[in-house]
Amino acid sequence: MPDIGRGGVRNPWTQPTYGYYNSSFEQTLTEKDAAGGLTVMRLTINKDSAPPLHYHTREDEFWVVTAGRARFWLGGTTLADCAVQEADPGAFVFGPRNVPHTFQTITETAEVLVGNTPGALEGYFQGVGAAEVRHDEDNSDFLEGFGVYFIGPPPVWSEWNRG
Image 1 (cartoon, rainbow, N blue to C red):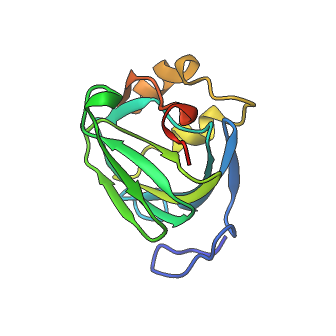
Image 2 (cartoon, rainbow, N blue to C red):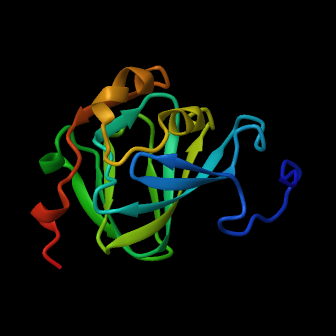
């Protein structure tokens, strides 16, 4: 893997990939690459890969939708209380620390760049690994070690996506 710490280009799906529950991600930029300031992953999401409503206490999070469409729930303590916004390809979404959020694909799949700053969260994603279905509740203590807390269930695709 070429050193990108002094600048450079990384084309899609050329970096190490990891299983994460029922999807996979590419570790596009590691916290080591960015001297701890940032981590970026490329994630392909499907209708069953939405995380529970949660918030981060240590980092801001952002997303860039590169393919497909995604729906984001932001800012509420329940899904019903969140602002709901849809993101098309090319959209940028920002989730500041301590602001609850979750997201889910609108299309069958979507590809999203997910970034965290500072970049200390990548160990969680690599540590969880692959599984046939999400089982977030089994990893909540592990996640809390990274300063991230679940506060509600994930969205259920069939309840809102009538498309």
